[in-house]
Length: 336
Image (tube, rainbow, N blue to C red; front, side, top):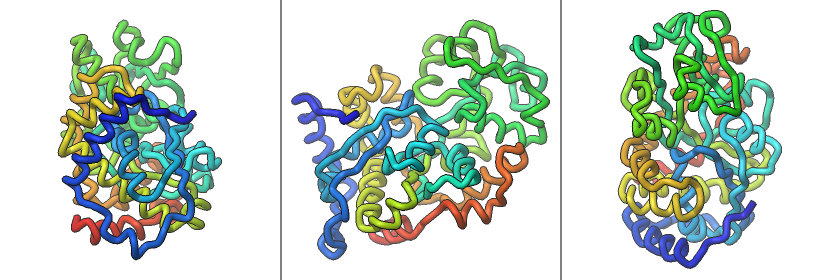
């Protein structure tokens, strides 16, 4: 599905294009030559507010030489990694855990950069104050292998609990896990924006872990940019240009959260401006300049192996499923 801009959305884009000057212009464009393709397909996720840089990069991508920018509807987590592996999506921000699981399974995806930290929060009912309190409790997830399940499994493994034995997973697509938690039918729920904002607005449960603030989760990327391996091999100029646009869009999320939130809503990516603005104001989109994405892959690969969700070592995951060349070049170029 390709998103067509209305006049209002176009005017908003112009405003963002002006704000993009805050993060500089691509000085190296002429030396790089044109991208090998002028079409780029990105995923449109639900709920997915946290991947706002992907949604507001249009003008930055156009400045990089892309003329056909498409958003392909997908669900988050493992389905996104599968879409990138199949080549129906060229790039997407996606959660680190499902990306690692896909590489372990031999899927042809490459992680190119870490983009932001802190998009998931664990909510519990009364009496639950730590991850250890999950033992013997019920936790709602959309499905085994979903991003909710993967991140909670890593949290449990990190403190020595067995995610296969020590808690009871309740899988449900309808009613959704958030509504199971809201209705008191499960004890805990891990949500991605705008779900935490919705629970706080309704005064339901309380936050047990906030990955934007609580260690060790706040020290590692949650969302990372992935690309199809063959696309990366054949289109190195396009890869660098896409990544540059996404990273500049991340800077824009930090510099102009109000404008970005309005654009995300006007583009049809989420319905509520207040939740979008809360997300953009709370998440540290500037960490791509500070954190080493390889540390994230190593950390989560260890946790996933402890949880029995992958068999590969972190070194193999890094060797088979990462390419930091373009990020390293852009960090120098953008003086990160």
